Amino acid sequence: MQTKLQLTLLPQQVGNEATFRSIIKQKIGCGEDDFSYRILRKSIDARSRQPRMNVSVEVFVGENPTTPYENEFHYRDVTTATPVVVVGSGPAGLFAALRLIELGYKPVMLERGKEVSDRKRDIALQNRNQAFNRESNYCFGEGGAGTFSDGKLYTRSKKRGNIRRVLEIFHRHGAQDAILYEAHPHIGTDRLPVVVRNMRKTIVDCGGEYIFNAKVVDLILENDTIKGVKTADGNTFFGAAVVLATGHSARDIYALLQQKKIVVEAKGFAMGVRVEHPQALIDRIQYHCKWRGEYLPAASYSIVNQIDGRGVYSFCMCPGGHIVPASTESGAIVVNGMSAAARNSHFANSGIVVEIRPEDLTDYHQFGALCGLEFQKQLEQTAFNNNGGGLQTAPAQRLTDFVTGKLSNSLPECSYLPGVVSSPMHFWLPKIIGSRLRKGFRSFDRYMHGFLSSEAVVVGVESRSSSPVRIPRNADTCEHIQVKGLFPCGEGSGYAGGITSSAMDGELIAEKVAEKLNRH
Image 1 (cartoon, rainbow, N blue to C red):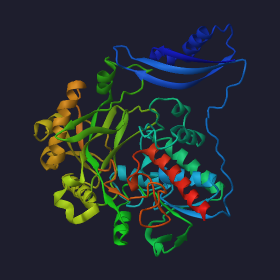
Image 2 (image 1 turned 90 degrees about the vertical axis):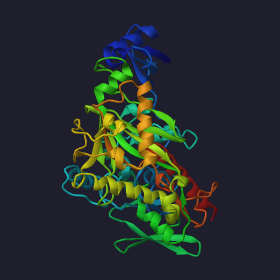
Image 3 (image 1 turned 135 degrees about the horizontal axis):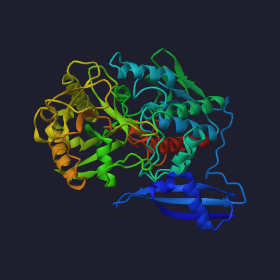
Image 4 (image 1 turned 135 degrees about the vertical axis):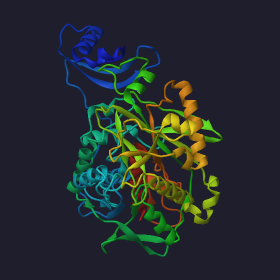
């Protein structure tokens, strides 16, 4: 017998296994403990003074649980199949490759960085301010920028593809059960490397190729059709199509396309800062209590407002997380956030960013479609010039000092491992960003009372929240509007934002590639 229950319980009732089973037993009227259950959905309702959990449960009495998967996956042997070049191994590239295998094509994965274990060592050196590798860092390497992030899988892009399918693929490759039922699922930076490595194993075991240290430096074109790519080591890779899934930080790819006179477009994006609070402070604000206890997760937040005609909003909020260095170039400072699966750090950080439109960048129009990219670069270089002279140290300011416009005489403890130095960020941030941020922080404090705190620190700069460039593609075929066989994909193409939407875009592109090749 199968039964579904909708329960609204206290966190401790859900978190204590014996108590939870007892409640289920009572609800189904079962006289024995001979039953099993599977959580279908779990979310937190923190609107009242006492947070509660809404839990949907499927109970099995006298029978084994059914599979948790709603989708079927058929990874076949594609060793001798038609090759398709996939440039980039982030979520878009990985999911494109896996879907190509299901559709009977051989993915040839080209990753400019290192495999995930070697990449971890380079990142450790970067965190200790000892070295910086342009091709192996928080953005470049196996799994892309998503590998060393919170692994947040929540997305509002429900029309772009099958979200459940993406979650199930992650789960099949080692992600925890909770991502299948949490309202805001996340994997965690400590678990993502294993998941990414398992995805690579699936690709290789099925006959796909996976090549590291393969930075693409040229495109092989014949008339208006792409035939393959060349890498920095002089190798050439041919394919029936090329999936370009290079991510929003592969600036050299945009420059290459422009050099080849391949159309790219400027698009809106967002830039700002990272703001870090003590996690206990965010818990008090969100859960309306002095201490959240052991059964509630580290609290998060999502805030947005319109300030002077532009959106100001939180981005990539990392409860129980750390701020990390995310630059891909020397002489530049970029920060981002990440959390481990347990989200057990004493800090909560989030990007707070301001919407930027191409028409805002009148001083950069000489750069054409790359005007936003140049604006990004200049701000990142400005942050480096105000970082106290360290390799990866970052400029910072108390949040209250930033809002009132004064230099911080001291800084609160911060999770950013390379270190922070006091800097007048209110002075050197461009007005279109800084003035809106100051107004935005005052606004946020009105409905998250306590957010504007001297315990909070602003760290700069958060400049890679989205791509300032779009690689335009045909609405029906998803091929580039100018080059046949070239399929722009994921965040770097300007058609996705975040792990899940990039993964769904990767699957879509794989299907469009198969449609094209099946017609010929």
